[in-house]
Length: 151
Image (cartoon, rainbow, N blue to C red; front, side, top):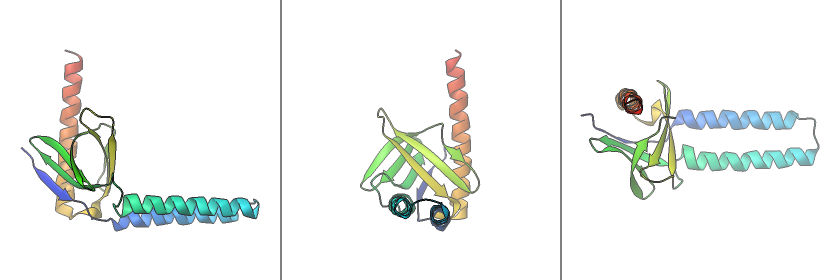
């Protein structure tokens, strides 16, 4: 059985991506042919939103930010701020060689957690192992669900 235990780190790729999006948004706002008050309001709104996204997702400071992933024979476990949760990996997760967006749901609860993991949030070997594990377990879960649905 596969076992994986990964402590996530702050991603430089994620910081760069958020910075580019915010900078592009500000450039678009400044070039709008609109009233100066409207543009000022938009700049303040985008800036506040960017700080919130940067703080919660890039720096992993929010209460729902996933800081650690653990997979063992018992299933998936994630660590957020001050708690460890037993969760299920959701089907809407996306796995690529550059970034993985993982959606988890607490067992028997509605609360969902999202973790955006760029490949620089851990060493290359750990990221490769994570991708292999995610692809094999998701394929297994999808096949198992498909079989039980038609039985």
